Image (tube, rainbow, N blue to C red; front, side, top):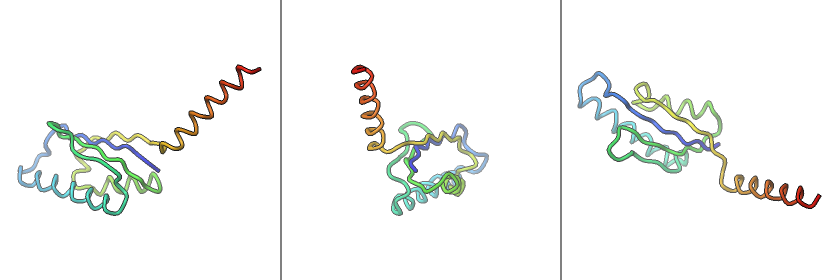
Length: 107
């Protein structure tokens, strides 16, 4: 199952800046590990913003929830999660819709 996940940090958490920056580094380290294990397909930080995104490939909604909740900054982030379908499946759907139009026009 593919998901586009965007995380935004609207306010710095109430902690010393050094601790906050350490949590950012730890969060990105965990994301890199997930990338090495094939769970994160792509992603990165947004330039000039306290936000970023990843595309995750997970087996279930529960796995997605577990992965997000384990990120060190998780409790301070606002999440936007969008389910995706693979491009080949989107292509199949588009071709099917096109066939339906052709069939309707021949009737």
